[in-house]
Image 1 (spheres, rainbow, N blue to C red):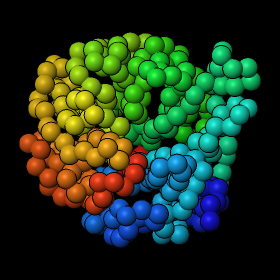
Image 2 (cartoon, rainbow, N blue to C red; image 1 turned 180 degrees about the vertical axis):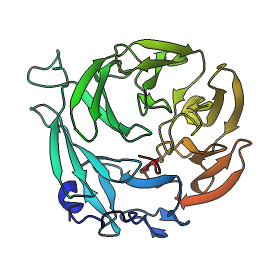
Image 3 (cartoon, rainbow, N blue to C red; image 1 turned 30 degrees about the vertical axis):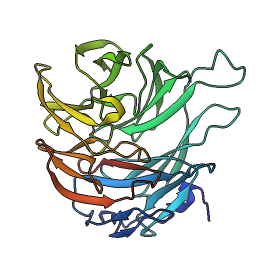
Image 4 (spheres, rainbow, N blue to C red; image 1 turned 135 degrees about the horizontal axis):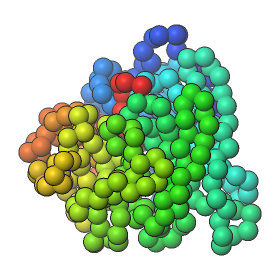
Length: 322
């Protein structure tokens, strides 16, 4: 049964108790299996989407109170301290976009209207708003705002302060919006995004007022999963840097020089999973599914196994400080 995410997560864990992580076993509605214990890790599997030919996406979010994945009708993001769940409902034909917040600790819910500009091409509509992403310290949530198209360009980002839940729009125009869009710097004081065009691009860093602070002339898009683009220390960052995202490139943050390039497993049915697991390992595709990979490309541990033809988008987020 499909249910509103806020209702699905209304039963919260006890104050101070660590939320339960998904167990070993099959993910509902898929042939994908969790094959390793997820508790105690620096990442959390918070949601996934499934697709089949001719059928709409089905979205599932982990509900720690119910100890199960439940169907939802929005894009879900969970804060690093696991206290806050933020849901971006499916875009309607009219009305300003909103973000639904649930405080798992108190059970309080609030809908936040997003200050997204109107779509100049469609009267009564607003620009596309996607990919809610928590800052590493859990103090802000960002959303990408852009015009639709084959190579969409940014109009800016929405930043929501937590716990006040006050939202503001920051204009950053013409960034190249690829999978994941804008990503956080490790200190949470800025964002990075791809700049240029496909095949010839760089990575730019902006502060939270929209001012350009640095450009790295490197290949690929900023990684969006697990601990995100930057290592926990912030000394290195990773991009998906080859056609069809078959390679990961690691770069030195201070110098912008290449550290290593790693070949990745891939499946045309999976959406890419790439980001840091910890300081020395990546969360990345493996021949069996998704797992932990070292900087030589060796699979250290498989976390999920998934058939090559299983259409699935997995969402892993950081877990820890918040």
